[in-house]
Image (cartoon, rainbow, N blue to C red; front, top):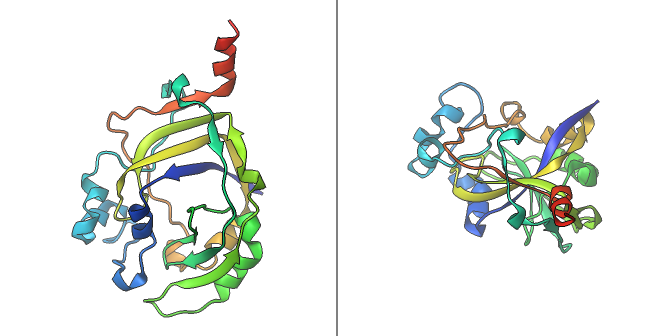
Amino acid sequence: MAMAIHNAIFALLASSFLVAFSSAHDFVRFGYNDGSTGPKNWGSLSPEFSLCTKGSNQSPINIVKDDAVYNAKLGSLLRDYVATNATLINNGFNVGVCSSNSIFFCGAQLKDKLAELAQVSCSEDEEAQVSVGGPRTKSFKRRSRKYFRYIGSLTTPPCTENVIWNVLGKVRELTKEQANLITAPLPAEYKNNSRPTQPLNGRTVEFFDEARYYGSKSH
């Protein structure tokens, strides 16, 4: 069984990225249920999380294709990454990869390492880490013929804004086995760690379509 997901490539300030994967030593516990630590209450858990409630450009959003505005000036989205050594991290609420160029890898490339991470035990105030070396970047070095762009935020506290989200138009697939591998190292309360969609608040979602762009040039 395969579950469809959208690949999201996002640009953000380095400081925001570091906050998202901050050390568990200064971690303020938040959750994803309807309780006191759930998404509706993130803004009240810490003064640093206020944007989670008060911010007007939050992520994720529901992208309605028919409402998106075509922008030919965006151009094709080029993806060109350089392989570098990276570390697979379980910070208690999320599993991600930290590297100098901040690439997030798909589970298929990290199957053995994810299984290894699931076996690493650590105390509540520590991160579990596994070195993954360099990724296979061939699949990243290609153009995205259609994608959507909007200004949003981090999807976890502190919900920092002014993040540029580029959401690929082509749907990729993730098998159930791969999804289970990614969530296996997480506690049960964080296995479903998806923040609810946020209000658009007047933002414009733009899109670029290579076929449309070159079709208009031919006339």
